Image (cartoon, rainbow, N blue to C red; front, side):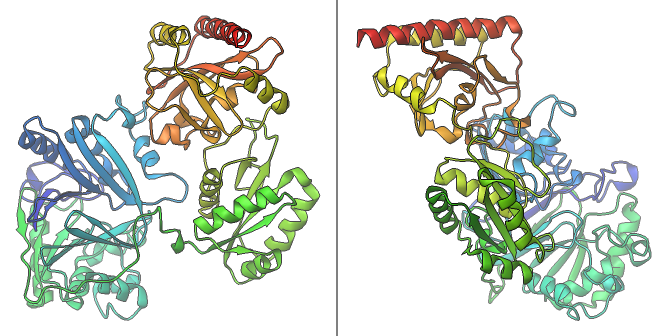
Length: 591
């Protein structure tokens, strides 16, 4: 492996004549395996120059790599909007710790919102895939990546990187679990610092946050950073070959860092070699003989790793269909399903419990069940409230984690359970059924148009809509029992999607047109797969209303950027929808 430093500073960039040798840019490290696997560790301001070099080396062919974020404090992500490879061709995987309230991409998009930056995250040219991590392991090419939580005010991961028979560890922001160890001492004396030592054991190179000396730390306890004395003792106890002091304090000039390196080597007494991370320098990591030991761990990727969350599910409903769907979803998510008595015992033992509560059965039933569990829950009870007639403007009453509309697919129930286990509201709300659902479905099926071939007489309306509103996608959608099907779909490469994911299922609830100017800011749609996977940011749909009043679908438009139609434009969309509805009636009469 080869390591190159592009940003070594912590907290804030500190360029100037006194920081020339060690550098003034914030955290960014390039790591390459012998086979060319590229990892970028953190994306502080140092990422700008790295990105420029990667683009030049690619010669217009696009770049590929993986970006590993320890956490999302500004000094570790401020280079992201200026990391040039993300704006060209190629593909990048971005990894970071899974949050409890916002997804990784939502957090990163925050610093690129229009209030702060002119280009939004969804406008990146490269293919970007986000991966949320917990503790454990996964592979990138020929490299094994192991993760462990660090001691920092934000949820932060350290990385252990194993490849070519060698081991490098990246510990960007970390503080002693026992503040007394800032001055050195037995770093194995408490189990938390001992676990940190174990994570680094046998590493050939450790890049470790060493922002303070002992005197500075005395007034900075709890800020989430280490002293050089602590770092030396940890790396010596772990048998580390080379220790790289990193995340330099912005107030430390080159001479101050020289003094810290010299002090660290005196303290190490040859047990590890200490150097200071300096921008532009490289460190080659060769395999020792025998090579360093590997640690076994469960998977670190968040999708299959909900087993790290201590929570169970209890269902309170007389609806057999709802019970069955929740049971199937819980099994798929590997979440234990408990009876009410078992759930109360779990709460008493300080285990997390999510109650799926059928609120249509009445508030008294919900309150009784909640009282049974919450008396011993001590804040460990989450409530997923289920309703069949939930209004789209519903808010979360006190004590309810999230809402779910029933009926729903098992996939949607799984998403809701996963969010409730993490104690956050899932920003994806399926539409409730219209009051006339049975007669509406009969009117739709009487049209005999579902699953028919595309026809120019319908396509001309969607083409008009694309041209009139300058959007990449315009659709004629028909909302069936469990799906939405597209009679005309220029700009879209699939013929249907589940009703849970349907914007149009919301649009048919009212007679007037519906528009969502920015889906990322709307709690009904922000985590809808159509937003997360296809980057739909704007939607407007006008219902297709038949002569009997049945709203069977919509004429809708979508864009990948936020927008807002004027009243005149909304009326134009509605007029096109009226013409499509007339055509549907003519199709039915002809049939």
